[in-house]
Length: 199
Image 1 (cartoon, rainbow, N blue to C red):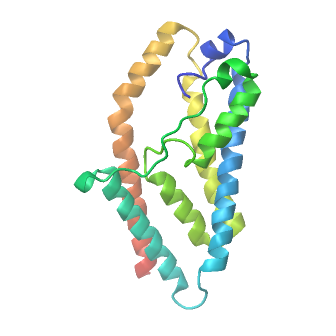
Image 2 (spheres, helix red, strand yellow):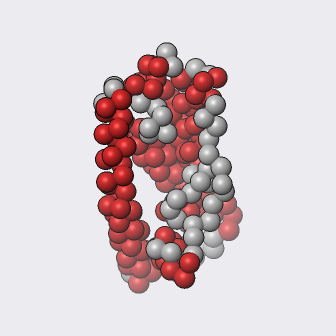
Image 3 (cartoon, rainbow, N blue to C red):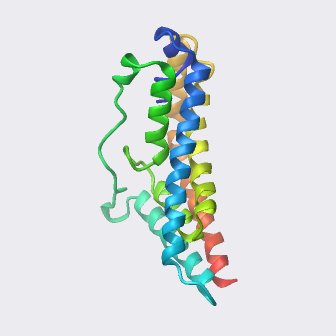
């Protein structure tokens, strides 16, 4: 989406980039918050209360994060579980910018309705689930969706083909670093969850 929804691309489709991006971010945050609320509601029904319940929740999160890091590293040939679909790019030609912005945002905000490239997506759902609260789950999920949707802002200066080529080059150059930061963040969150287990 980052390479498709740019000021250059939107101008070519007679759409306004700020409007499309605003609806994309809104859709991403909305669907992710809804998924987080649902996970929190399930957690409300499934998590025990009382002494030790908090430790069990943190242990579950720690286990999910540790498994995620192992899977993301491809240990033993493991791969991230994923559906094999993308958003329908025909929408870019068939609908107005705000329509495909909202539609793409909703699908990508869910995290699991298109190709999943990192287990952090599943870790977010687990984090929403262990809150045991729909409101807190919505906050966890909504934060994920907001950040995911805001990724389109990286293309804000793509107003020419030269800048589009430069954006692709930057994305390629940063791919390994971004992956490393993602893994390090998951490992750090694993450490925080362990503190919760032992605290």
